[in-house]
Image 1 (cartoon, rainbow, N blue to C red):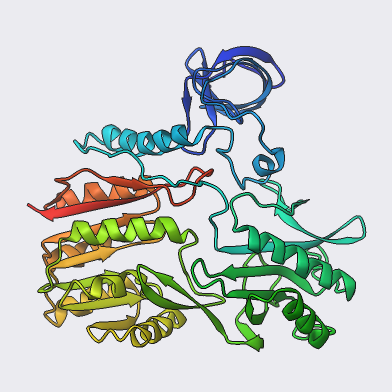
Image 2: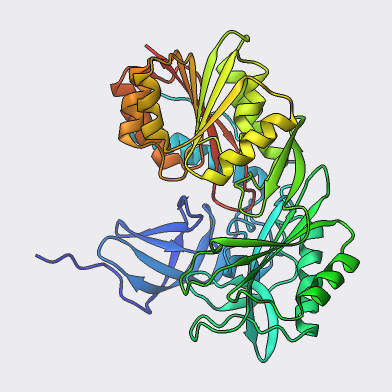
Length: 455
């Protein structure tokens, strides 16, 4: 017999909001059938309209709030919700931190794992933290505009103040936008795959205040390039680098293969935990420097290094964790699949006069096997994997070399918990509480540090 949902599209209901999903949607139930509703919070009563009905759950739209949560923030900017820039902006900050702690705790509990999750480390100012922007440029009503896409679409919402970005970056985007308008540079049209300028990218050093402007173009040639570069330079004294990235594809990828220097250096410099880093246009560098320092310090503290250990840093990027660990370890080995990142990591080691860190290009899984075959015996393995978590083959070879500890920096609670189960099968257990860190305030994402110890 086919299941029939107890609700139909366009019906209206009065509901109690009982929970928040990990995407930040309020949850209501009608005869045990869950409905997910944007912009609602636990403890609220709402009048809603059903907008989508699936087999096991549906979606509703908020029509009217009948009772409000004491955790609700009143004056929010609808554009930040519509575009997904700040999906949790309607939730008070201390409640956001609790939500993130709860999200992790609930996943461990559901997995029947006896793990304690500590309160989330937050920020004094949970806005204006991002040190990097990638902003689409489109033609709207005959005018070149910058902004952000409405969720689940490619309709651009023009925005000048991005709320979670460094305000100097916001200003720079408007300056560059106006210069591009002045020289009648044609914005990219993705339907026709024509036009010139696709995106504006800006990076700004949190401590150094050096700024990089990246112009991402569909064409190899940028018309009036010399005038544009001169005007950007004159208008923005912090700019030490202007780069053009050429993306010829008609897909959604942000950057193309070729990057050209238009002015200044090919990188900006910034500091992290007292170390200097060179950051190029396509370097992976954490976007919230203040919280990254807390995150990495926590990971290093939990590794309990005394200068005698050998450490492997898998997924090492441009060497941020490896180089911070180096002064506490005997030898550090870093591996990363992105060739340019490893080149950056080697330069960063030289910049900081660090001689006990060795970097190789390769996939963490394969390199782990090679090191294992070479008889490398790490005391600690540090991992900071992408959202998809650790590959099963990595867990296999990492546990075979039998480090005392695996320190896991995670950006995705569900893959962390999955990997925790796999590591437990290999004899690695969590003996101390997990520490969440709020790397992305106003959004649903949460980073965390977990230590696995050999039984």
